[in-house]
Amino acid sequence: MSGSKASEKTTRALKDLGLTDYEVYAYLSLVQHGELSAGDVSKQTSIPYSKVYSVLESLERKGWVEPGSGRPKLHYPRSPSEALRAEAIRQENKMKELETLIVSELQPVYEKREIREKPEIWMIRGEENISAKIREMLKKVERELIVALPLVPKGLFTPLISSLNSLMDKRIDILFLTTPEALKQLPRNIPNLAETRTREDMFGGGILIDGGEALLFLGRTGPTQTMLAIWSDHMGLTQIAKIYFQHLWETAEPV
Picture 1: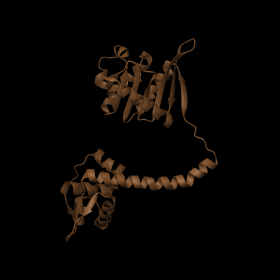
Picture 2: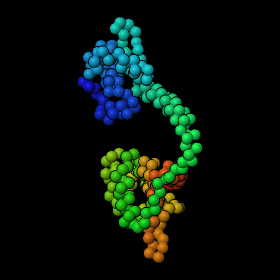
Picture 3: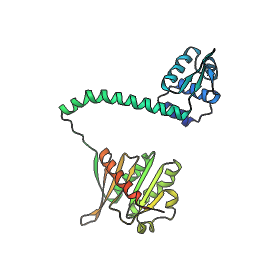
Picture 4: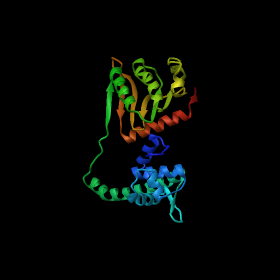
């Protein structure tokens, strides 16, 4: 789009909200110029004149644009914050309608057939296998990494610490919770790589990525003292893990 000052990320974000390419172009042009007629919007963008009116009408219905008066009729952009609030309400209402439709039709079928959920829960044995799972999880994290580490098994921590720098470059939120004693064994730059807190009492530890996958350390067991862990992407388990972590985090001391 000619004349647009928006970054590629912002343009993509508007499309992710459900705006079409033409709607994004029109809204950005109005934000840049303040007010435009339909003809001017068409000239400022790649929108054909035959389609610009329907594009502006759609933006009005969605709450991104306000109509003016006069001849030619001018169109005004709503502020991004107001437009996003209107969009959130629209999406929420749409979600409620879809939820009502889907649940009313499919829930009785589900219950009649006695379908049961089969959660993905895996037991992982040995530091090497657990370390491989940690590396796999860290490659997928997009928004948030939560780490609770009361002990410092070198075989588990090495793949984690080597990934923190690259995760910082991606602007991922990293929360790191450990004990004061364990912190002494960790690299001194940990507080620079992640928001770090310590707590005296921690029961178990684990890793949670994007609130959707959890790896919980169970300690060592058996004559060979094999390290055990549980991995799961089951929503119930990951929610419990996050709630427990948040409780520990709120009562921990910042480093």
